[in-house]
Structure formats: C-alpha cells, structure tokens
Length: 150
Image (cartoon, rainbow, N blue to C red):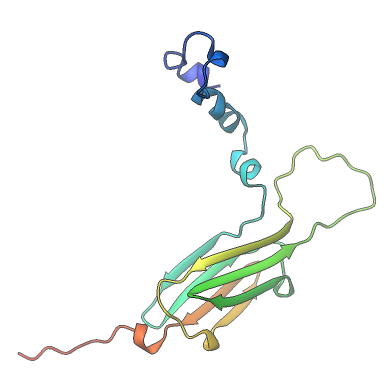
C-alpha cells in the first residue's frame, strides 16, 4: 500500500541483503489493516477522561459491557488504579467469526492523579457502562485565594 503513495522513497536494490530493516516493510501491515490499533494492542484498555475542579479530580472511564461487580478501584501512590475483567458470553451454537473487534479478558489501568487526593473520601458511580469517580483534593492541594491589600 505504501508503494502506491511513496514509490520514489522506496529503497532500490535488494532490501533483504541489507542489515537494517526496511521501514516501508515494517509499516506495511499497519497501513494495510483496516483496524490496526485493535490488532496491535489486542487487550481491553478502558478510555478515560480526567478533569479537575477546585475541589476534586474527576475521572470518567468507559467500560461497555461491564457492571460495577466486574470492576475493582483503589488509590495507590497518587494513582487511581482500575482493574477488572470483561467476560466473553459464549453460546453453544457453532458460529464462525468473520470479524472481531470486541476485547475480552482482564485489564488494569493506572491513571496518574494531577494532585494529592483524600483517598478515604473517594466516591464512584457506575451507570450505562460509564464509571464516574470523584476524588476530593486534600486540603493542602486546594487552591487558596490570598487577598491583596492596596
């Protein structure tokens, strides 16, 4: 596929005889697959959004197909650690998979927190495949407004 777009840049001569790998040959599988990211990573890695307010750090994690009972959550060394397992539903009927993108299995994700939090006051809610975690900031991490005299 890359040959079509960059024929001039392709090395000339016998590439197999050189010691260095051909960059085009290495990149070919990546660009020829319609779903390269899924094939490369192969594991379930939940997508997360991390935001911050004056009072707390907010984390939203997308966990489609999971329930609250499938997820473990804890704060450790200024990281929010998210672990769980997505189990594949198996049917007894024989069927041939034509194309599979869904990931199954165990996952673990460590999310660095931008500031120190009160781990004993963390709350989490799970609804419609989205985990919403609120991590209150510690008192010393909160911004304190200082009045200026004139």
